[in-house]
Image 1 (tube, rainbow, N blue to C red):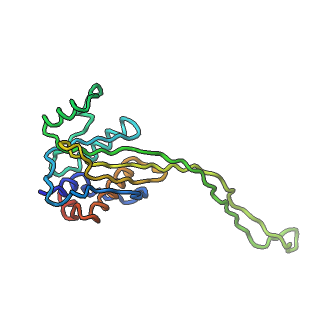
Image 2: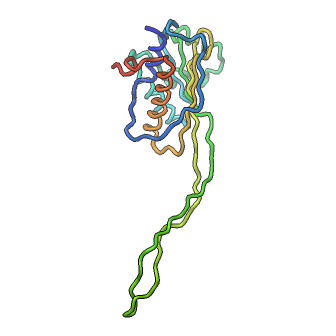
Image 3: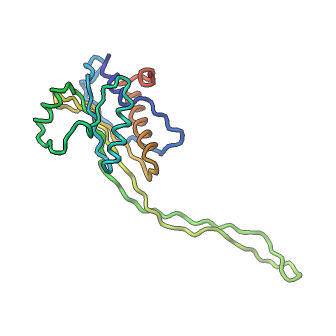
Length: 207
């Protein structure tokens, strides 16, 4: 199995019927990455998002998407007391973990915009036994709203070489549901990897 199959394990199709809009803002691929690259045997999934609950949901979702069952949640593996990078790498190597998928929230951008009010005008009115030349209006006033744009970055690392192989950042504005937002982010990244030829559609959708 080629390395592109490893990438497809992360990005197994999670179709969103009516999810939030996400935009891929930037991406980078290691020039040496190709179809002959050795695949990962075991992958550690790390989600550094809003809070611990969000982290667990995201890691579970990514781990569940692996058709080979070779993904491991970091919340079940890493200990808060483990701070020494060399010791952590030694533990990963000992346990056969050779790949890392890191999803993290990098920024929240707040902007304020003005939403124009609306006014509707009615026709001529009838009053006091005669037709008066007057109209009437109704509608809603304008208002200011604060928008929040979240930037989420996904990185794929090789443990042995401590090398970044692929990275992509997506943005989404005012997301309302965590599940559909995560699905949309994964789908956006998967689409980009498809377009770059790093994974194949039939490999992604295979159960």
